[in-house]
Length: 185
Image (tube, rainbow, N blue to C red; front, top):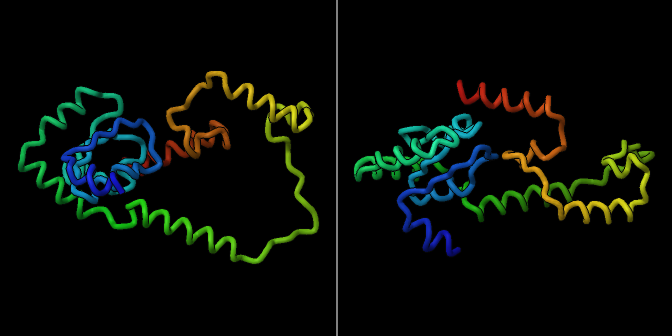
């Protein structure tokens, strides 16, 4: 509530430096309030057709801070007003958190209301991790996971789905290439 009442209405520009996004919810929410987004050209930015360079946003190459600063420097009163009005028009109310949460709740309610799907037997699952493949007791596997979770872990810049280890690198590369093709389209 504080964000919507006091932060977004008092901003002119929101800068996002992400290299990977599943959709920058905070940017879209800010746009609803006429905040001009200056956003890195992350993979998928143009495919969403919300962030249009020079129309609804200003984009810059990922990691190029000089280009980001140059985009901000372009924002005289006229361009700021033009982009703010376009940003506000392009986003729909469903980009706001309350509507997004309402739609998630509806989807969960619909799923819970479905009849149970009961099969004749449980599917056999392949061991999901190294500890299971080593046939360690579940309690020991859990304790080892808790212990190793405290160690520094390498972070993938796109560690949200689909990059969170659920699929292999070849599939991730295919998804990235498809997103790149959409961005070029």
